[in-house]
Image (cartoon, rainbow, N blue to C red; front, side, top):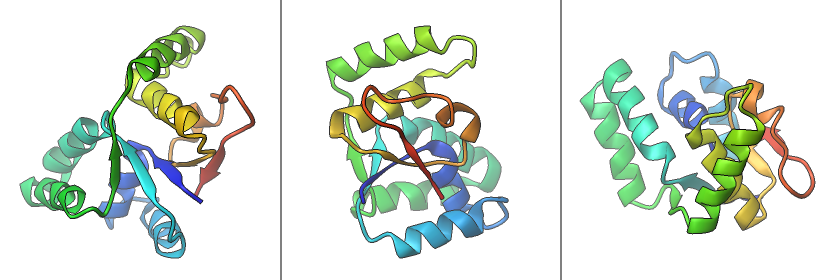
Length: 136
């Protein structure tokens, strides 16, 4: 099953000291399906990697993107419009643009699985159709 990845899950995958590392790694190893990374996740993740682990971790992630370990999806105009709607609807969370764009991309691709450590946001936000399955 294709999943759309959130920043926190990808960070946990890379940082062995993260509390979610074992769960995310286990999910990664047992799920042979594609992992889609919305382009908006990349700046957020690379900043975390560079500031918390170091430049080598940031470069290794970008190398993984270049080598096709992740499927990066660009935002379309409709995704940005949907993200704005979500930001307004969930202003009390606050959701944030990156998370809103993840929801928008998942909806467009008709993907129900979100690879995330963020139960606070993704446990509340619901797609237009159905419900999200949060993994791990």
